[in-house]
Length: 492
Ligand code: GLN
Image 1 (cartoon, rainbow, N blue to C red):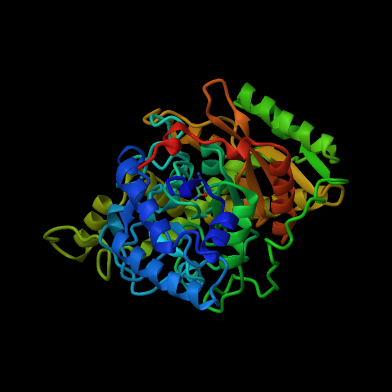
Image 2 (cartoon, helix red, strand yellow; image 1 turned 90 degrees about the vertical axis):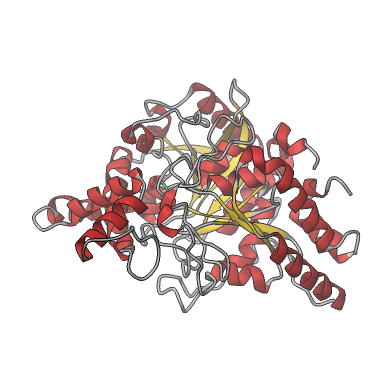
């Protein structure tokens, strides 16, 4: 079969079970595509071909025996922020080039236990700091819709790999938008779960109170399948929540939209820098949801202007603390011929970290330093609480809140935005992480340059099933999620 990469996760699962094809054939099919097409996209940092085939054979044996997990034998790509035993985990940094983790992240372990086949590790902004994936030590990744554009970030490799059909599904992480924004830029569905729903164990830390892993795929249904594997409490992550996990696939239904109250924040649609095509496409998608039975309710989110400054204090503060462990001593990059211990620290960190990471370590260290702690960090924490309260108040009157995922479509590679310009592009995604809420991106059309536009739906705590169901129903009534970039149509 030459078109295995066009099948949904449900179709792959059924095809494997009915022995229409084997996991080995499916895995070889993807490896062949990666070998041919990824030279242009550059989504993978590491391809684990040999190991993937071993895993595929094991999955085939499990499927034959009749007691395999529904996803056994289906390939996936992991963002290179998830630790993988025996395989390099770089977090897109020179600091961790050559780092081989002695253990698997819980997300990786769960995927393995279900029999999913790891194709490899995909590119990302260095330590997940960025919105373009260009800050990776391994170079930029192309957007499958226009290779001279970025796929978004930080989970840009995950998005590009799925959008070019170089993996049927991928894991991503979202600290301030890194699942939703690349999903939006690449025309995919991506879910950022409630903080605490997916284990952070073995996920290299950027900002621990904001980081959350989740699925990136072509459809809400595909995301639901991967959520069923990765969600759940983990004793190894004290912030993971011990709460029953939904069956996200079984919960998908055709009744999520009728009677749904969708909040439209006044402040969101008047943001300077909101692209006209993005605005139109998002409004059209809301109109469609209205036709399907939803009610649109105008709401106020008064803290909107505080999102960017609050996030860009708290995230760097936590990053400066998390990244202090990279000292050139125990693991990671070490400079050549250090004069003394101070020189070792200084040069290892200056040479091992890229410019954006250094900028954030400096901002975060400053904000946490004696004398400035109250004025910046403590104040930002108080504003964070107000942002959360703003959402909780809104959810008294609406079920979900709609927004664009990003004010623009994908930037050109090398556009060289100033840090402030880049940070402002995160306006629609940051608050969700500050409040710990779940949110999803769904593709809703294209701009005048044929680049994908995404709609974001923000839900109340633990509403992942509801968000997936709404998008699933939208996707059953529209075909944006079935559109494929020309490069995905190429055969290997
Ligand atoms: N773009 C945001 C940042 O640079 C979010 C990144 C993320 O979610 N990891 O911090």
